Image (cartoon, rainbow, N blue to C red; front, side, top):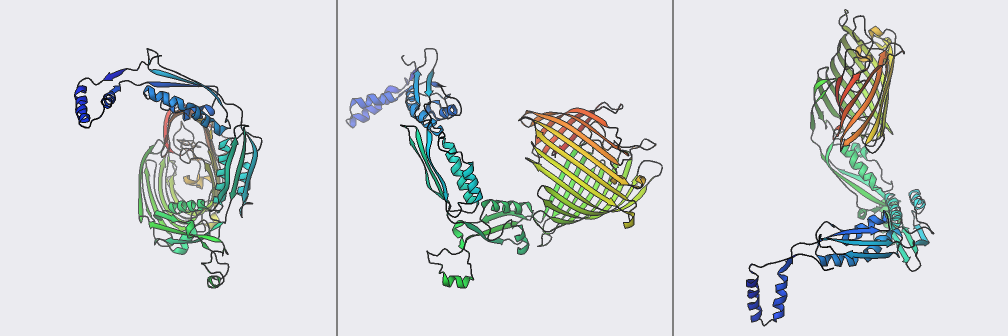
Length: 631
């Protein structure tokens, strides 16, 4: 078929241009044929063509790799000149063979056709019918590790996990994965000079067989040397306690990353630079340095006594002495709220810090201060001395609480542990005829928390739990004897790629001799945005004779929720909440159901819920707005 490509000609001043070149060439005695050739250059195609590529006979992943490898299929929406289309089409057989080879097919049969456009269009049709041919099998495999690290458990595991085996189809990605796993295991264990003495695949396409030689030489192991700090924020002996390794430990680059993160999280430093170069490694002297240099001259290339140690240099710039925080928000439980905070980061060179926070809302106004002292594992453990004053007004209850305390906050493998003791004096009014009452409590307590999640802000899968137990005794100066225990649990489970199931629960109990002497801060209440939606904040509890909520001894709350992402980070939710507070274990549960809007924002989940209380005849619907993580 004759090509139907349309051609435009430059008609306006083409003769003038040719005449100018004719005179030039005449002076240089060039043949007339050159002028004709140049005139041809001035002719250009006005419209180029596109190619539609069809591939039959194979499926993914072979199909995807072939299509991505074909030059004639690349950017096929882009117009091309007919000559380029034919040229790229001729490259296709070799490109197809190269694309099938990584999957073990070295002898494919390829039938191809190229149909030029018909008179009504400008699209070419390139068709490739592929028979991938016989599989290439691995008939010989030499997979080994040599050197001092050959018995390292991580290397043994990499060998065991390799999918390379004789009799199996040759797949290049399995070879690459094994190679990477072996090298990574050796390097991460401190074998920084590890290299492959043999790394080759020998393929015989004539009989569809392959032989693999993959041999890793680990070389000598490197170890951490001394860590030297260049900073003027903290005492050297204190800042060294942040280092998660010690001199003599096997070198591991991941431990350097851990050190970087630890120092960044401390809030003492702004810019942190860590240098650890293999070329700076020095041999550890097994005896005194001066005697070692005499017996084993350092310039003797044959001497390799002692372990290779890599010194680590850390340069850190101080962060600003103070940091300030300003926040504002709104919640249906609290109404408008604002917060102000200040933190003094560098009180002394022993890492002490001071922080204070002011929180203001319609139902609570609180001022807190804390003096923090790093202890034990200084990266995550601290001893804090606290002071606070809080004024709370919800429902029929008003309360003002003054307190001081001490907290030992330490980490463990799954979360946090807090041992604390508080001294509080609370003046409160329950809305009855008694008026103001005053309570003094000195109580120790212990809190254990667990948290594990794929993303703490916008969780797809995770769990959290906490247990808190505390109590007071009249024999130690408190107004009342009591013991309180509270357990909370949350779980987020993925249902599909776009949906989740969220579960929440709270249970609590108080053992007390005289409940009337227990202040509101130690009683149980529920209801609101994060407990039982459809009901007011802290408005579910036993009532006195006047119908005022006064809190209770036993707490039980549960919630089940499902959400679904409709568009990007925006989704919808449906939920069912249930909960009650009582003075016995016979609960009269209040239920709430509803739907909500969700936004997985950069600062956590933003929730807007419309809830209906099933057990409150005086209310039809209540709007709830909240922000924060799900766990």
